[in-house]
Image (cartoon, rainbow, N blue to C red; front, side):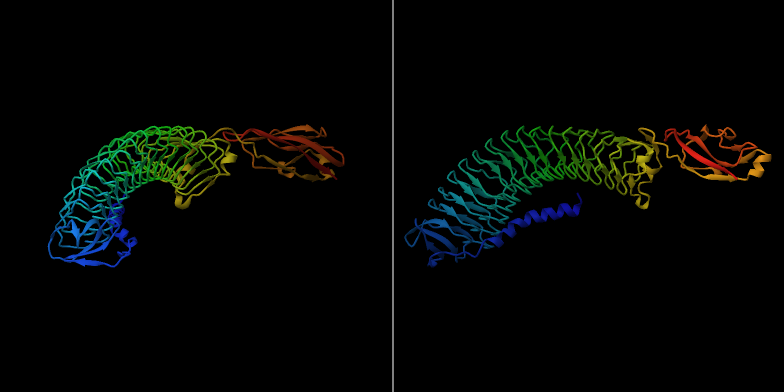
Length: 538
């Protein structure tokens, strides 16, 4: 992956924290805002909700009561964008922290939550880049979407066992080094720990069945992870450009998403037979990946699944595979690979730049070799092409040192294959020595004529006629010979085709039946035609 692409995706991941704000409206409350000293608040069913702070202190303690009412909640955006706030302390009766309650409090370093907090809203502490200390009480049951997104100074956080719900991107870009997810959650949410550059270890509970999209995106220090046996789905870009060097994919996983392990440090991977779908780019740019075991029953190898895996030397394509996508094995290092008999299509550039590939046999059933399919396979000398192939795309064999092409039919069939030789890109194919499965029928063509000679001439002297006066022979493959089958005894034709009319042949028109034979050659069978020509004496 190019630096530009990788950088762009980092920016995209980090921008999620900010973009989410577009969907959170201006704070609104059903009741009029009340004030008490430096506080703004509204009433709720259990007491009051803090909606704002107008004081000058940077170390704030939220009071137990406001105007005699117990503070039970921190409202949406109550302290949002307070760039001077450093610490916050809550009393024991605060149950809920609203959406964006402390959003982008850049100087906030420490938070002391009340001992009864149950819910932490979406983006509650998002972009608090200096926050390094917060303890979640055991009463917490819900952590909202992107609740701690961008808290890059927060290096440790214990998630209480009672948490039942964690929103997507809750810890996106956080400075955590390790984390234990609570028992009972059924998924690792999308982007949960995306771009956590310091993350080294994760404990996932047995209850999890899904690893979400971008869950561990670009966690570069995360070198290993244990997936529970109940996992069924690994999402798109789940481990994209993470540091994963080894992983066991549980038997029971049915799908691996697009770019799920793109750019990781995997050295080998065994994909269980339960997997029926492997998304595009799933293992692309895994530059240390040397060995892969694919699931039996897999139908399609998607685009660029193993593209740019320069260490990949060992892989067996299951018999069940019928389609190989574009760039599927681009840049791999195997010297040979067996394509399954049931294969029907091979995508553009599927084996491009496989510099160690020496030979390839394309199975019957494939009807076209796409553009650039074997381009820059600099060791490819032998290719076997079935008679079912009708078209070869441009640059299919560009810069391949082909010496032998084995074609599954005759030369006649090969001549019908449409080879796109744009800029000479398929010269290696066209110039290589051809070996055909069987010889073609001899295309020998014979046309007959009627030769006229004068009676006066033949009365006195035997006449010799050029063969072309009675027979025109073309398209023959191999030496042509002639043999008379029937006709007047005075009219002869030699093996070489010389026609002789002996003297004293009477006037009239004479029919002569002849067998014309072509000997054939390395590419064409022997063939013959039986024809009858005429000689008219007058």
